[in-house]
Length: 501
Ligand code: 4AD
Ligand code: MG
Image (cartoon, rainbow, N blue to C red; front, side, top):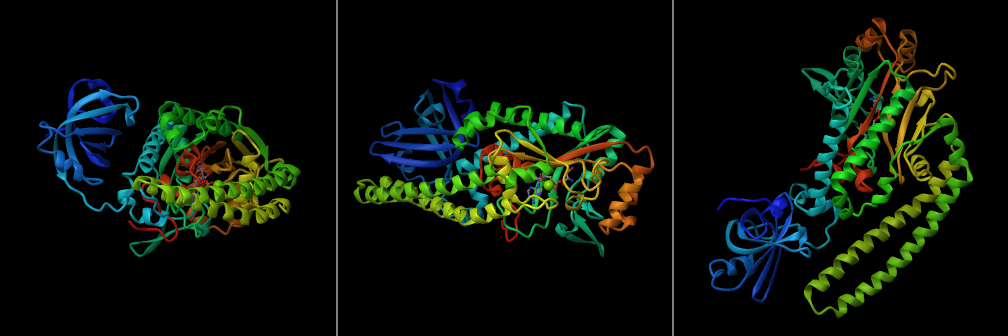
């Protein structure tokens, strides 16, 4: 057999006979019928096999097909709204390609560690499938935005001779006997390119030796970095705002149903409209120490405790349901829901444990220090649209950021915090274009001048005000999909302690 249609375009074949090539997602035999849900990489389709003369050759085989068996299945396409994907196949023939047995990822609830160890198979599960499809579109949306707005894509190297961001997060590689580093950013290189092309961007993998296992950090992640010549801080912020609105709206447009299936609150994404908030670092301190932040966390404590109470009741009900269940699938369902409720309870308990600490950090926030993850979460949750925080203290930021001429202790930079507590997804700045000031910053940061001679050249020959930003692909995807943890947004996540497969 040979495939003649894909599940995603069955609507063009209603009433006709087609052959699909795919894998068994679920199999539910029921007396004289077998209901096979098949997936083919474009969607899911229920295939119905009726016992009778026509199916004599394959009815028994179909009945015993297990999850992930690969097959060709031929049948007549029926439009059926109640069916997954909106169509159903009345099967007329079938050819098994490979009968899979004991597929390790079953419909029962598995732990996260187990699923990541089976990442190469987990891709096939519906939720993972959707997330990576959304990633694919997001990458396209990002490239399209810059390509249609006059930016030239300039690829930057992955082997780098020196630090681009903080020296603490460098991965060292042996390069024919000399130490070099995996790129933390392509920024310094796109800065050179914008002096040739005006508006440029790079988009590729970047590496940070982050020694913490947080829900926001990967050691290998993708970043898009536009860089613009003759641009001020506010010009760059305007581009970031327009860009974020554009990609969010593209995702809503192309993937509304998928986002709903992932449980994303669409209304929250629809709020991502101009203008975003623009506040200065100095005002953030007041916000963090103020009554609104305190109230937010106190309400959190009450709400989370109440939710735990609800879930505990649910657990008792589920126990009864399981005891009274007549069918195996009812027992399985109750078991699945029990695992889910228990996981949510332990997550809530963990969060409750951290709240007093977060309250203390916010209340005692000191001017001059960097914002921590929990501070960002608070600021982000106090706003219904993204927030640009500008003008951080120079001391906590990278050497290349432009000194604020009016307040020399501060720099012309910005972080963009996404909504709903997702925190920073963009970091950017105007770059120091003045040779002497840049050199002074390099010296202050104890960075060897000889490593940056090429970069200083950009300030020797026709230097202009310029700036840009970096948007993390995975953090942005977590935000758009509403995933608490970043690890599901990349095919093979790399974090401290995670390298297989
Ligand atoms: O704020 P960062 O470190 O800025 C830069 O690298 C600049 N050179 C960008 C520029 O101006 N061209 O990183 C930018 C973004 C962050 O806002 C975040 O979205 C993402 O990159 N990011 C990470 N994502 C996942 N895991 C990590 N460890 C990340 N570190 C940064
Ligand atoms: Mg940053």
